[in-house]
Length: 300
Image (cartoon, rainbow, N blue to C red):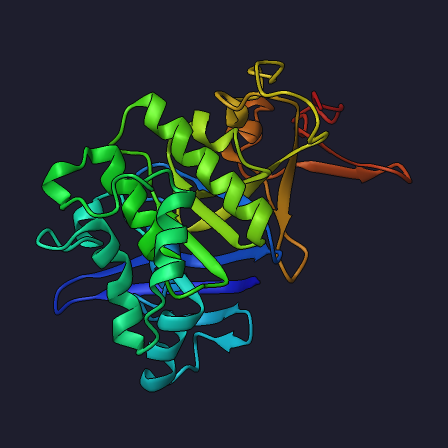
């Protein structure tokens, strides 16, 4: 569904140039439910805006389904945003029109594309648990209910990809769990690909794959070894990059197209590796060690 290779995004003003993404690599399979984590300023929201067609990439490759977002025309971009991608913001007010009912809000994107389907709009609101609230105006809905309306809106034109930027950042824990349950159900029942950007490690533990972004680059992936294992503990908190992830996970480092490994900085720091490392291949594993200045082997 998504393939990014060497993706670069540069924001320029008259006096300033900011490299938000500096050669990011990412592949997302069709039908995945995954999360992208990273600190503020790491580039995760820039990536989501690029995938959503809100920002134009500066260089590299970025493809979503059949669309090449680096070469797409303005007319094609409108079609892409109408038909391929749905977007959910943390600030749900960006998705909603306050003077309309929940049902009318869901129908609005359909009206813009000329394909109003009231039965489908009602079905979407039922899916997100608002069957009895669909005729209420927004001021009659709680913040969590408004966020669920926003999820329904994002699905109104039957997108193949759903992008969510901190979708639970403004709701309580109970509502957050409810929203994640909706995402899991949608992913399982209609097969939509869902990418969630978050800094909440608890939320990240509830998806199938987690990709960490640092300084505009993908650095580490965490994948549940056994999807049947529960999420109530068992995570290895001794690994710095995995703190907060529950369940049983396996860590992956990203290999770029010229064979370079992007090893998380905290792993290198733990080994005392600064600017160079010793590497050997024993036939099955690549072993990275800290070089000993006296000529001996370091700690691996």
